[in-house]
Image 1 (cartoon, rainbow, N blue to C red):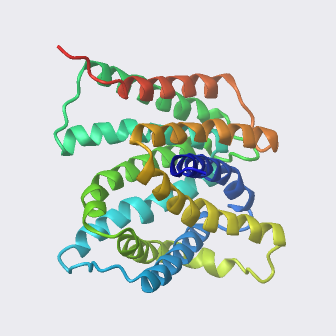
Image 2 (image 1 turned 30 degrees about the vertical axis):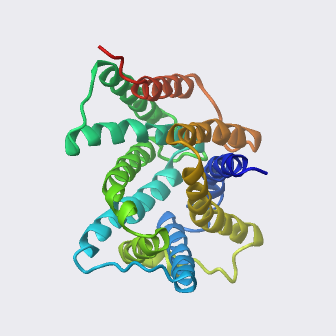
Length: 298
């Protein structure tokens, strides 16, 4: 199999792992383990794996004390606050709504790049931003009366998922320089180290409330999936895809996630589709498509 085909397979697996994560996490939180407790298991296990790998691989670069504040801030946006808001939001809303809202990330990155990196916004991108955010607002506002067994507070849950997308977008901006300066294992071991520090105070009571020795096998398998496949595995596979494929090709797999998440949730009977979800999804995807169009010359 060629390197390109391997990269394409990795990209698809990343989308599939993330897509099933929406349903897998809903199977255990908040009924069997609190969202913050599950967040802690995600970061502590992933942190341990990255530190072990960094010890074995021994990358030559070292993080200076001057860089630690920048890494700590990136970890807050990309690991700590990001994972906490995602897991809490997902525990309150439905898998389909959460997966659709996550597609707003490219639009948010574009807005933040214009504000902080002074990247120019031209007319089509402004139109795309307005359309995409309209879809997100529609999904959030119309979800207020859509509480169900698998979405106890969809309005608050969708707001938290959107806040999570904003947080992760800040992380992308902050990490742009860091990824160019440091080896992936050096950077990730420190990002997750700070992530553990951020999440532990919030997760402390939920960690104590969960007893893995009395939990059912299915609960442990779902938690294991969220930790190993949807956290550590997705990052490693994504690195392989990014190294070989163009960013535009990798982005296609990001847009597959809501489709796959919807099919999985519907197939397992864990969510339901309705007109406002379809309408919001169309607006968000249209917004992402328009903002990704190249600027016309002249």
